[in-house]
Picture 1 (cartoon, rainbow, N blue to C red):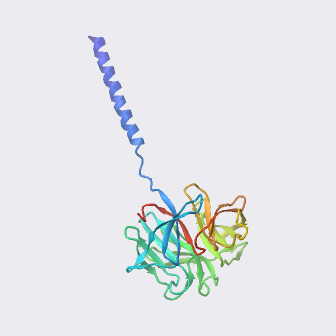
Picture 2: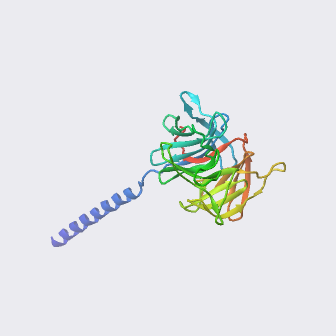
Picture 3: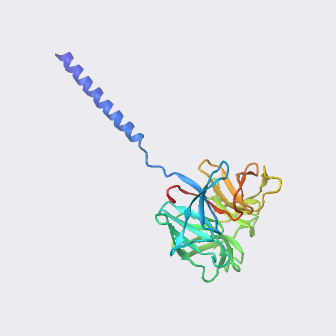
Length: 283
């Protein structure tokens, strides 16, 4: 009888351990959902957003953003804020875009102007990112920054579009101005940013202190084309940096070898706003 009781007790403990193991395994097999992202581009002349195939540059039309029933044209760059699920966009400089800044409701793709640049403080914010819950980008001032007397630099805005601060770019203890490309992307950390100036990529900290200027060379381009002024940058889910130049040439960028490897020429040289956003936004 004693042996039978011990056997029953042992089986009970073994069954309880098995249930515990299965429960824990089930928990481990159900991590928080992952938001898949897709790299999109914008044609500012038509307002059409498209996803881009990173292997061959083929575009798939996704849709347009509207404002009071009209397609929003002239979008220069976009960024997704995961904290509030909102997309933000900057626009081109020339009339009628006037460097406006928008918020975009991803559920409706309806835009709201959050900064109309009514005083024409800047021509445009060519590159846009998020930084500590604020909008962060490169700025081309209409005149000169009143504090630093510089034509270009970095800018921070609140999520309602109001101005917070700006900083000049500094290289070798002197102010450094850029006026071509002006794309922005994070580098190896949240304190390192990459900016474009023509075919150069500037490596800087978050405060605009430039530590390195990399002269990027193009490889694999067609005979009638060369790399010319990188206007947008984005890192894919695969960890590879991609860019588009002013002639619509799309390619991957290796900062170690300083090479832009040609992938494809896009249907329009105006295509910009290379950006990684949740794939559900345009569904």
